[in-house]
Image (cartoon, rainbow, N blue to C red; front, side):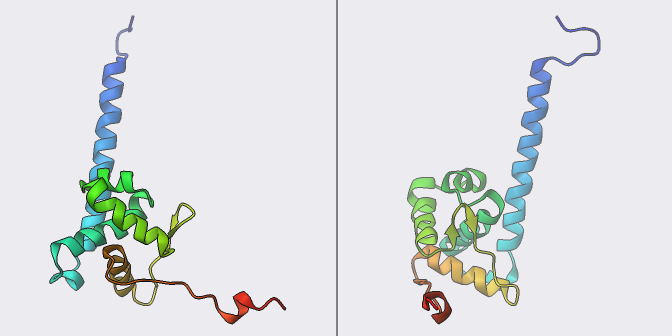
Length: 134
C-alpha cells in the first residue's frame, strides 16, 4: 500500500519512459543536425542515410540494432550491410568507432559514408615501422 504523497510504480515507470523518450529524441536530433550540414546538401537521400549510420555510430555506438532503432532505419536491408562494410574496413572495431580527422572531419565522414555505401573500399596498410621487427 502506498502512503500519502508516495508515487506508485506506474508513475515511476512513466517518468523513466518519458526520460528515455526525451533522450532518444535528443540523440536522433544530434545525428540530424550533423547530417543536415550544408556540406552534404546535394547528396542523394540514400547516401545521407549512410551518413546517418556513420554519425549514429558515434552517438549510439557501433551497433546496427541500436542505430536502426534510434534512427528509424531498416535494420536488415539497410543498416546491417553498411555496418558490415564499416567493420570490414576497420572504421568500426573493438566496440569503438574511428574518430573523424580533426583537420577535415566533414571530408572524413563523407569518405566513411562512401565506405558504408560500398562505393569506396578502405584498406589499412601497415607502415614500415609496423612490420619491421627490429
